[in-house]
Length: 195
Ligand SMILES: CC(C)(COP(=O)(O)OP(=O)(O)OC[C@H]1O[C@@H](n2cnc3c(N)ncnc32)[C@H](O)[C@@H]1OP(=O)(O)O)[C@@H](O)C(=O)NCCC(=O)NCCS
Picture 1 (cartoon, rainbow, N blue to C red):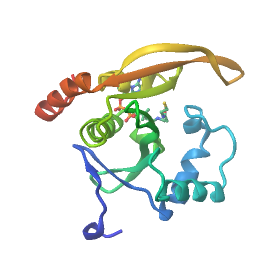
Picture 2 (tube, helix red, strand yellow):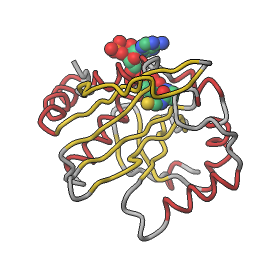
Picture 3 (cartoon, helix red, strand yellow):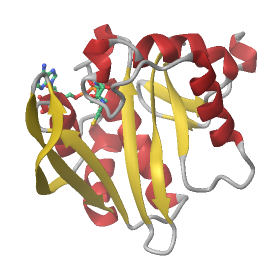
Picture 4 (cartoon, helix red, strand yellow):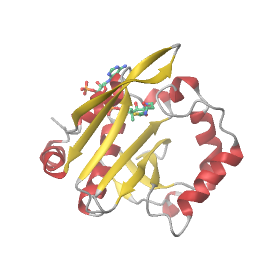
């Protein structure tokens, strides 16, 4: 897509978040079927093009107000991953996030943190959420650390909850409230650092 027609929904310091489109499907398929990537998420079954199309269609439905997923693009225009809310509980104003940076050379360089900070800004200041939750398999240290960096706190563990690599692992439950995020957000806006 040309730069003039670039769709930007949320803008961070390193990335933008934008709606996904059909053109993203081949890239999404490459990421979700990559064992180095999908070891960290719920998918363990091969994902076919048709399933990815259905998933995109479900996101695009007019009556969908419970899940929203954005594409993460660097300011240089590289599509590196997805991030969004897998579930929104409107009555309680609680949202559950999901994230996947599929371009592995972009891991651990602060792109996830930047995307998460603007997603949280949208959650708290636009959607009026009061709490945002996240879950990670215990061996996913990078995910746990980036959530902690953004101000999340560990709320507990579901013991031996995921079977991976021939054994069981705990699921770590994390969450953040608006007031805790605001402190990190103000620092991030001022200094470009979350702590
Ligand atoms: C989880 C994910 C979204 C995080 O995004 P990211 O851009 O890689 O994360 P950031 O660079 O912003 O932050 C990573 C943190 O982990 C640290 N980190 C980097 N590599 C690490 C590693 N191999 N092991 C442990 N920590 C690591 C970084 O130093 C930083 O923490 P610190 O500042 O406290 O030191 C991304 O790595 C990803 O999508 N991974 C694959 C799929 C996945 O795990 N999805 C989440 C499922 S819960």
